[in-house]
Length: 407
Ligand code: AMP
Image (cartoon, rainbow, N blue to C red):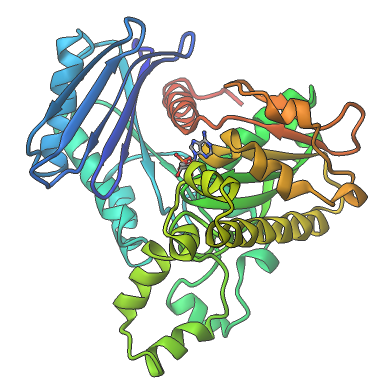
């Protein structure tokens, strides 16, 4: 392999995000986003990172194939095209890898078939991921392509955490279990937290709180995930931007029987119109905090429910781990919302958890500690970098498969 660059592709249901990274020094060469694919007002935003040069175009982009071709053309204009010999591998984010894919995987037909078989448990995400892979393959059939699964980091969970308390025959027939998501972020952040503490990941137990528009918590013991809050789908667990998170499952039968709602209507209600948005009409934490500061009671209740759930998971994962070295906040809310971090650990001094108000108020893009000096449990803010993690894993896999270790 001569190339040192990795193109990371994250194909969502109506968007494609991408980054081109040079693995010699981790430099981001280009990054961009195609939004609103399939609409008349699609938008492509492409940035040549070093030059700080951003180009935007608006106009209909019919599908993922057209989107990727547009991305390839933008990269080509900067001399970074997909035909470049510098490109070593394309790394794809794939949301659902089921129980089989516990590692980044070189994509071949059998891998595509398995990703396709998982569509019933990831109906929104896996089809878009597959289209992204197939289009990239058509553009560069000779280039290795690697799938990095959102679920992979969680495959180390013990059965006691991964299984639901239902008849195993039914669970197996319908592949019902806790898979967990955001795994690339939980893996990256737990490792970076160990680095921040100056310790090896194997020696550190971390509770990772990935708080973005989607949100999940995980308990990581010595670098391996032992529990996570999302389940069969990303609906379970924390209160999120638009998802309810945990609820009595009987709410669903109740809405069907008494509310006359269909399964699809309830799916939309719980995934798209619940969470912070359902509670107060806003899903952006900045707006919610602004309203709370103005005395808005609805926003204050939404914030309190969000924090209460977060605290429950911190307590639960403290008990799961037994010994906790660090709690790490990450993603849009976790990295930016100091009031959320403060409220989430308020009153948990008995567990050795506290934040220093001054450190918590600092705004920075760097991983940092916000707990008081000498605290029993470190509280950290660790910016996540899923693209870098996908690039690192994809590049390592291709290097390894071309230069297998002689053991
Ligand atoms: P993500 O899904 O990780 O991109 O996170 C997106 C969410 O982060 C947004 O919906 C906001 O709720 C939140 N967010 C982003 N920036 C800030 C900020 N400066 N303060 C508070 N929340 C923020």
